[in-house]
Image 1 (cartoon, rainbow, N blue to C red):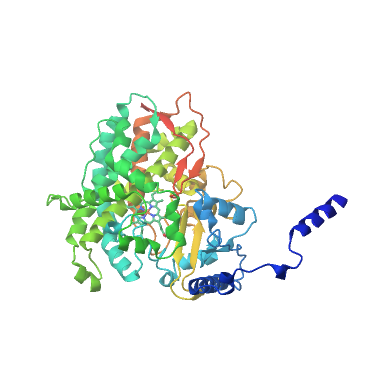
Image 2 (tube, rainbow, N blue to C red):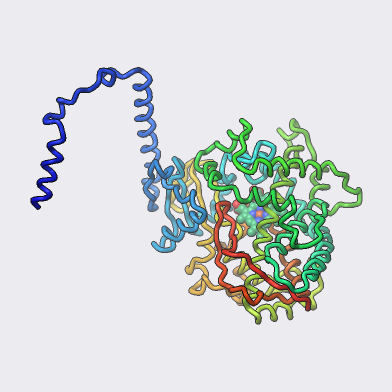
Length: 524
Ligand code: HEM
């Protein structure tokens, strides 16, 4: 105790006897105008920020405390696994369904509550048409700013979606499937050429979905001598750059309008070479002649819908030149990686379980590769395996909407400018919806209960009018690809491979494996 007292006495001795004796410099007694203005603005801004952070006070949900240092309470954005960890910490461990936080000043409702998010994505879609306003090209440059995913005004989105959707009709998909089958013939030969030597499964599934998309959707065939060269392809290298943006991407979420502003002033936030390469690549493909007879791909359909910028102001259908480029790019980006990832996890889980692989082979071996056979009735186990992968390794990590009109949903008074985010990783693993074995890979749950496919808590492709436009293409491509691979090859891990792979979330919200999944494909 004495030591503490001595210490305090010493510290006290170092201060002036009377604090008023401190000489305040003349300059500070009468500060210059710029300093007064700065201090005043700072104080007002702080008051405004604190006031904004009271917005959710009466919403009846727990709210994470906001701080300046963490841009509100959204510090989790800056971590690769941030959204997953946030869901885990705040929802799973605390047994909650909903929490609120502030993304800088914007209120965000973070929820897996079906009563909250289902109406937002469906019946109240009119008040939540967009994901995030003014995000432009996601920092990739103004050439790519007119993508279907990000445009802010609902009228333009409706026109684009109406123009693009017919490309995914059953008739079109059947035509594209015939192209996919031709490309699978090539893939099977390339896998056989490996002569059973192991390869990173991602090279096989990536080559299949990239080549499949380019040829079926755009009428462009990828030339590749060996599957081992896949990662040397320009398309792969540049797409990989775009899909691995680095933490700066979060600035676009945290600062509203920043994406559109950067596009306007010509600043690219990441992958500038890749964005430039893709713009040229898409333009070249659009300019290339399509044979009159080739009606199978998106491009020929898009080209027929071409309208001028002026016409676009009032049209309800049609695509401008820029929009065609953006659509080609966004469909490529959205379509290639997601399906490649899904198939890679399917290959991994099938290799892990010899009995499952045998059952799958028995199921697919005599089923003709026809479009009408690619469903749960004809291929129950194959569909179940892919659904289980979509559940536990969902390529999309979270889904989000932005509120444009004040509306009360399940007691929560959403105001214009607020947001909703649904963490899919947690929704797809919540015991409340999936039962005690929620974390286990059990494809048979889908066979026992086929209705699960329509359950509101299974939303790997989103839900409502703005769900994934490519869902049916993705289903066709992944079911056909997996069926063909299993028909032709027995898949095994090499002897020196341990099957302890974990799912890791990247900054770009992709589910990547914790290590390469090495697989030997032995011809049957
Ligand atoms: C396994 C494969 C895929 C998964 C899991 C997936 C998932 C998703 C999800 C979750 C969304 C957001 C939905 C929402 O906000 O409600 C989305 C949107 C979108 N997806 Fe996919 N997707 C896949 C494949 C594809 C393919 C193959 C294409 C194109 C050929 C595609 C094109 C798009 C586009 C353009 C959008 C934006 C739709 C809009 O805003 O109107 N996706 N996807």
